[in-house]
Image (cartoon, rainbow, N blue to C red; front, top):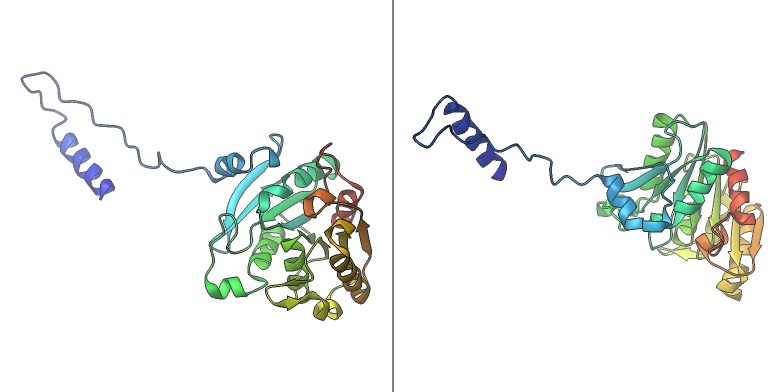
Length: 260
């Protein structure tokens, strides 16, 4: 309704553009404000993530698969791309690792919020599909960014989602589960071990508890992939030092996995 009223007003003003009233010339038409309220998704994401995405990051925010929130950090074309699945707090937490990955090796990362997290909205059917967000991100990586090697890396919730997606046939060349719970959305990850590709790794810190540590190590052994133990920390804390903000040993190992 507001737009229709503006068009009508503009038409009336145009029709009277040659008229002069007793009080002087008619007022100039009000400039169009169409799009003035449009929010730039990249600027909005920077504001939301604050320091979690460093100012130096080459960032672009967009959506995939209709309503899945995603962001690119790094070059817009690259033959190596990492798809990053987050913890329940959302994709911002991958920002420091992704920015360091550009600085260290020029890697491009696609940060993706799963259905129901951050700004991602999905139908019930899409939410139930473990490949919905991942497959859409893989298409962007391969078709839009030109990637020949795509890896899927996840922390905490994202680690479990990574295992599930890869076991269900995600088109990726390597994968990593960092601090992923042994069960997610009713799926016991141990039952998927035989379906996991050999080019991957599982990491867990002892501080997550004895049971979680044992289960993660057992998953790695059953899948035939390396297990990387950590002493203390969870998820992103294991890949970027929370104090010094530099890549940890595991963070660099993920870089090597992405590079192939």
